[in-house]
Image 1 (tube, rainbow, N blue to C red):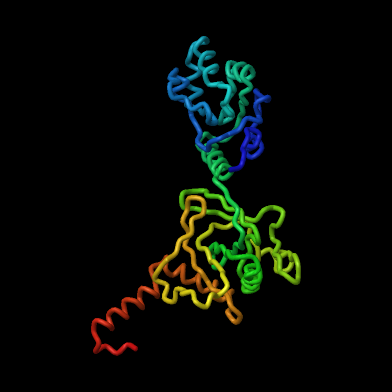
Image 2: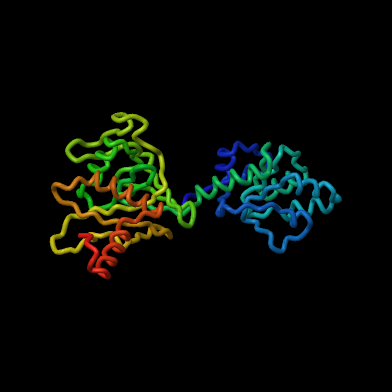
Length: 311
């Protein structure tokens, strides 16, 4: 999980820092935000002080009706020693009581001209992306017909060479060798390449090649949601491989299970075409067309009625 500090949201959302500059390096540990309406009214029993606080038109309108002692007390309560920041939205005037309390506790107070709901949405999306659980996988990620296909396998099995052939066939490379994966939702995994090796592909015998330079900007993309995992392994003579496709194997990445297909590798097999077809077949299954199940139904029907000549 990446570290996010208050200064990061100031830069990302173009916020104006009003006071509490000493606290801009405070960590933000959750993507949840708070609109402290009840707290402005004086109820602090369940105040989520570890969240970024948003003060919109509703909160500030009520605050301006309070008397002076109440205004001072409310702002002192809002500014805790671990509060990452307070944002005033809609370009509203920042109360003097908040400025004074924030300076004492070093709580950054920021100002934005955006509407509260708009800022809430943008800030939530930013924090969820930055604070999402992450991992790194040895493999290649390719966008094939709009599906993110993660190709895994032992070193030297042919992952990068297969990716090169897929790029030549019009598909797009996302990452080679190391794929950084973040879980943006319970069932959503997004992969990208580390900055150091973005757009690069390692081919043994050739070395490092730049896919974008060789094939153009349309041959790469910066990130892609992972839909399926293709595991390449050297063909083992005595191992039984799935020949029908009824059983669906799963691979767990962080907390999300992804469909996994094991493809044996041996001379003469066109892996690029096999992976391309696997992606198309996966898409068909999602659309309700399952060739393996159709074949199984036909076979069972033929067995049940021997007079039917289907084979």
